[in-house]
Image (tube, rainbow, N blue to C red; front, top):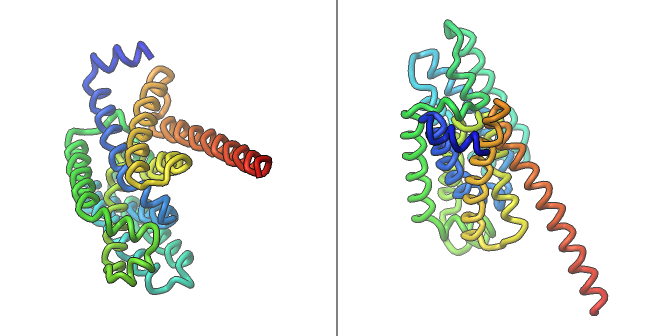
Length: 282
């Protein structure tokens, strides 16, 4: 750890990596709880993997892969949202098809793009140590959009997350806010791609929020704890991976997964203990 702290002071690339991890944790904290409470992790995963199509097309036509990822993520979010709203009986099949089609399109464009695409490999698997300045600007802008939108629409999103039917009966335009929420998930996916890559993005999006959900029921508190946990996992993962020269993204995910499993076991044990105490006292 001392070696990492010394290197952090001396090297700008580590400072950028730490900033990227903290920016990513904000997105995790703001959107992850909605994904967990609304139980749309499968759709979030579909959006994440369909993004490959936009990245491949952007590379082929000479544009920034992150710009292609942003467009593809938003289009995928709207398509999957409409599938959920219109074809609920076949939802899982159709979303899986969109997931596969997006990846297939991306692979075809990548195959026709001349040369080895090092940037694309970083986006697929994540390389937080090579985050460029333009990616940090992207991440700051996306965090601002997420924070402002959540602040403006918090109460409708809260109603949508816990009881969409009741919100509809109260006159809330549920469809509009549902699609908006999926678009925010899409923005968060793009935000996290630079840190852990699109293959692992769903884990960092959901695990901090799911861990926080073991102990709190307030969505606002869940957002705060998930943000802090995300910052902890990304920072500690970066520190632990530095010495042994391990990939930082997978290290962060393993930390988050270990914390979630430990937390789930502890939460289950506490519930069983309370149940036994209630039976004994009753």
